[in-house]
Image (cartoon, rainbow, N blue to C red):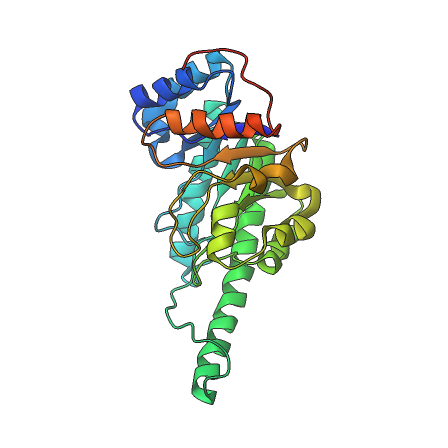
Length: 270
């Protein structure tokens, strides 16, 4: 597995992280929300030997929206991000499929009225997934033309899609699309990460590695054992920590190296 990290969005801090983690991490994720500001810093990081991945923008984007104007505007933003990623020299773009405008999620078996709510949500969910699939198929073709790998990420909240292995598998219908398993999101959604691995097979090529308490998206350092299944496999593993300081990434690397999941560092700064 190739190990990467998520740096701060400030160009100077971005490069400080890059220098401090050199020869330990192989790639850096560039956030689409700061791609223009980080272009030069990303090019400098490439000159150091880093590869780049790119996380497409996702706030207020709904590629499966029932409103055509919102859906098309969302897809236009995502197309812009694919083009920016290609110009930047990234090799992979990760994206979200959005969420439903829905808030009622009662557990099963409460009453017929509650079941009616559940049925309505399931109907809206199926319709959203179908529209999102159509939009992502267009994006996947564009990504392929641009020489990019496009991955779809699992999401944690009840209103978000895709959330389960079965919903991720629905998008296997798009031949050019690959997949990102976010371990922290799977935990919050109450899903077993191994189920995603089994369903997605070799099209699972990207992993977001972080931990939480099962309720909140805390982005704590991952347990090395959570990554053992990916050791020796041709996938990219992004360690996703808040931008506090680069030493946390060094600590994660040290734990992974001590358990044999990554090679010992080859020197470098930090």
